[in-house]
Amino acid sequence: MSVRCMAQFVGREAKYSGVFSCIFKIFQEEGLAGFYIGFVPHVLGEVLFLWCCNLLAHFINTYAVDDNVRISAVCSKESKLW
Image (cartoon, rainbow, N blue to C red; front, top):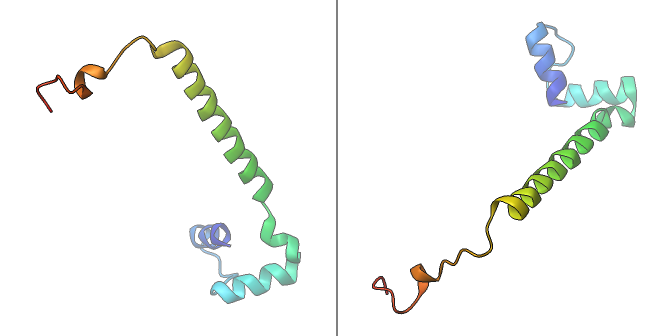
């Protein structure tokens, strides 16, 4: 509904006059399925984005991060910071 209202504003049309008229018109013209147009591509985009982020994190953790580096000098009791 928000995309349709934004497109109406940009195109300077007057199909919807408010939220309730938008809901009524979508239900009247397209039925209940009209509210879910674009839902599947949005979900697929989110899944693809999460998959790419996890793949990138895996590559960074596997190839870029050295496991032999110790950070114990900052947190040890012998350190002068404590």
